[in-house]
Length: 345
Image (cartoon, rainbow, N blue to C red):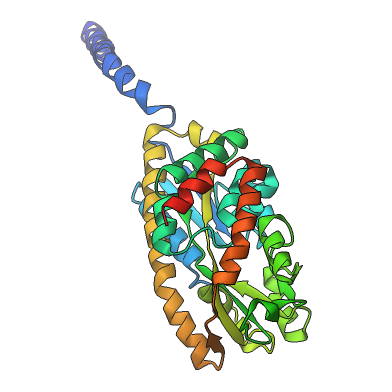
């Protein structure tokens, strides 16, 4: 009986050795290209600074979550303003690991030391969505992505370009000419190319946090502001005395950067990287579609709510912007980029 038991044990051990030896070679072959963590679970914290559940940012992030979680080993937690309503908070969390994917604007990103990004924020640099898409989805967009990654020392890796719509003036009175904005306290960026441009029109750029802007318009802290229909209408800015007159200046077809921490991304397995990139591509498409659809809807809502919309001759505004574009390109070293952008109009 003891001999029989011993024989069984010997046979079992021999079988295990054979099995391990037989599969060892193939395991090394697949593991080499896949990277560490293949098949392991991954949790991604994705965040933006808008609080409305209907905002295109949220729609895009939910699509990112949906597609990423088609990989059963990936979980995405979306935060809509709950990790911070200021972009500086979100970028700080991205660098320190408190968030993995965030959305930010060129105006803020240029403050991190990546001055070239200012080119995409300069007023009237783009003249249509078709023009904007041609630029960001092509060679120039790739070039900017490389600049962001290199200048940030891989803290920021671009996953895709989103938009926040085409921005217009809204304030206490309509604009019928550029002279009408002179002396107005205008909520916009207070530094960089955007501030310089509005200062050149005679406006007084004034800083007000987005979450405090409704009250600032209502109480006369600012005379006017500028943004895209889905953003200011969702916040009811058009219902205030200093927000009811909308002039379609169309001064900015906006660019937003969907970023991930590059160092963290590099630590992912090949499968995880592919999942993230596929989710990002789907999110880019969904966010843009949502924004484009919402612009007309929210314009009509503003009119239905009693806001007044008027058109203006944009040529004087565009001509003044060309000077700022040239100065910005010379300052940040993007003269060739500016030339190509203009040629693509």
